[in-house]
Amino acid sequence: LVWLATPGGCRATHPLAWSHQRLPVDVASALWLLSKSGQMAAVAQNAHPQQAAAGDIVAAKLNEFFWEWLLQPESQQLVRQIIQNAEDPTSEVAPHSASPHALHLRASPSSGRPSPPGSPHRTSVGFGRETKEGSELESLAVTPTSPAQAQSPPASPVPAPPPPKDIEAHSPAPPQQNPVSPKPGAGGVSDAMASNRTKAIPRFWWPKREHIGELAQEHKDQIHDCFVRQGITEGIRTWEECEKIVTEVFKLSKYFAVPVFQKMKVFYDIVDRASISKREAMMQPSPVPITETMVTGWASGRIQPDDQTLSFFSVVKKDHNEWIEREDFEIFMFAILMTHPGLDFLLETQEFQDRYSDTVSSRIFYTYDRKGTGRVYLQNLRRYSPSIIDTWKQLEECDDMKMIRDYFSYEHFYVIYCTFWELDSDHDFLLDKDDLLKYDGHALSRRTVDRIFSETVCKFTSAVPGKMGYEDFIHFLLNDQDQLTDRSIDFWFNIFDLDADGVIRDHELKYFYEEQVQRMECLNYESIAFCDVLCQLHDMISPRKVGEFRLNDFKRARKYAGIFFSIFTSLNKFMAFEHRDPFQSKQEQLENPNFTSWHRWCADQYLRLAMEEGEDIEEDHPGPED
Image (cartoon, rainbow, N blue to C red; front, side, top):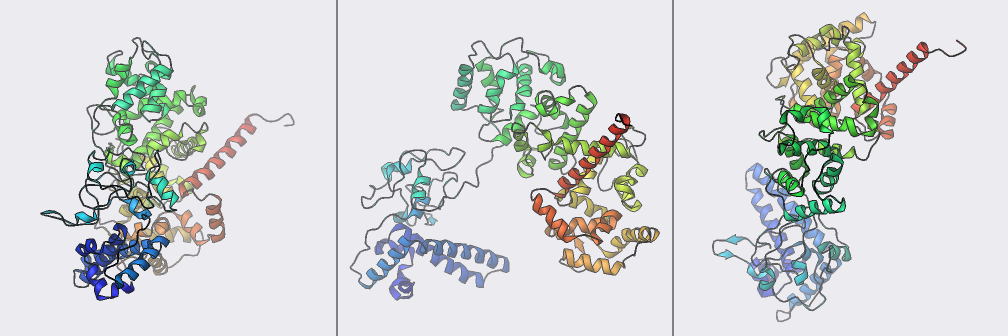
């Protein structure tokens, strides 16, 4: 830094001067970062406010990179040597060990931008800026310290394209003085970084494919190995023989083996296409063996082993569609019901199997079908969480379905179905307004129920006017008990936005609060003035504009969004908030830090239902003393 303050140091900060100063590559790069951050900070002062903010962020990041480099012991030694040599222009920079940060850059015959390890290959690297004539700083093109390093693959779960063959030919000879070269093997750059006590940046981006091409040769060889290991010569006849290919080559859950085997039989016209939805036909052996060539032919265009989301999407959907429909999950759910050990007790109850399958499908579409179109697209699977692909694979690890907390949890299904059954007094599998008013001990206000049944917020799927179906109730229950999600916040915001102008104002809140005050007075509860409630909620949400609550305000303060909506819609939750014990809430979070409000509510309800069922069993089968 002292040297940078001198006239010679200022002149040397120009990139073109580095080649004359004969500075090491990593030192030159660090000095260039520092100079560029200063230029950006200067430009940001006279730029547009938005551009200035962006420039400040970039400048701050460049400064961070520089200080990180400067804190390295070898970097400090280099700076001292450079300052000493700067006093004598005829001297040269002393040789040094290659900086570990130089390994973060890949070799290339031309300059370009730096590429972190694990990111996709770029044809040019370095810190120079490209011009019309070509590279402005060819002398600063970063080269590996050894030919072996140039051929090391990126430290990434997804194999990257091999580097150009002419890299080694265009690269200068490796330095002979204290080289830092990664040892040959799978470690590559990561081993070299570990030896220098530096952290490799994990891969955080890779290109997302939208279409699948032909199956790669290495995956074809893996299919052949599966055939050889199982001793299959003629072809696959049962779904058990297909399981190894599905899990080891296709990288899908083993519970995809039955549907994939059935889809192969239909694809090659071994069975009738109409039998794809017939449950009894799925488990039957194939009358014609499915050969290795047939498996490879079916997988080409459908399976991308290094992109499990794309493979999942391609396998589940129909071939002529670009989306997943609800009925597409039927054969996959049937495979789980028939083969998972945690659901053996449902084999004799067809009705509960159907309800369980409907519940899981509804929860999947609740998460991924945000617009209610009945379709799930590939971008939806990539964007929203929890991931259905990961949850499907978790089924292999858990034999107890109550241990799964997302989508497939039998505990959640039991609570949802029993809650619906308690409200459905005539058991026609439809709920009207009076049925929903009984929910949670008559907690909902009538104005809230009227707003829900108006279907202005969410259209019902029951196809019966004024009736809420089982799927509609599942979505309502998830919105009511898990109010931290975007889907729930959107739902309740639209309930309160009576004029649909995108803003909730005091008169809309007062419309719902008036009924809450009447109900509290009927129960001899002390009512709270609306202005006091509004002031407290205003401090809780902190809207950008006083008196106007917008959707983004609730998503910024999503921790309190559920409390805000519950005060005006549910009397039970309103009173629970007024008499809350902060220490008890903190203790519950400490005991189960990964549980959401939905998980806690389901656990409480499941315990209540189990106790009630136990009492009923005791009444039906009294003991000997009774």
